[in-house]
Image (cartoon, rainbow, N blue to C red; front, side, top):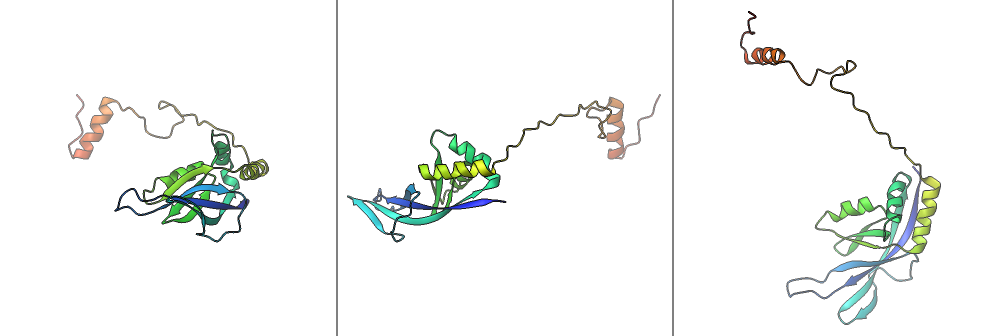
Length: 178
């Protein structure tokens, strides 16, 4: 399966704790297509008690089997990249909106949908143009329950058939015909 790997730079913002029991946490704030010459964890800016850090560069892996998901992302009002963090460390960057939604269901994980840079969007569009295969939707037709071609038992049994089966299961003698 063809794939492409892009390197994405991630910055994070750390706010002061809301109360004395809370701890300072680092939240993903932006992604950049160009990798700066910073070390991971380097303080980039500070305004009062709000600090911006460089969280490092990470792989954005595009898979050819997920091109339909990337198309859905690009057609959204705000195309995004999802950044997942565990304890201030970036674990995953994805352009697949369904994978991003699945990651966000974990309460222990911080997941942010960040604006997709134009250069990344162009790269994803080129990847889609090269690898997307449109799958035609095929709606399955149901076989009617009364079909003679259906090998299964009929869905509705006659009253005589119901009683014969239930009497046999209960260990009762079959109903006598009069």
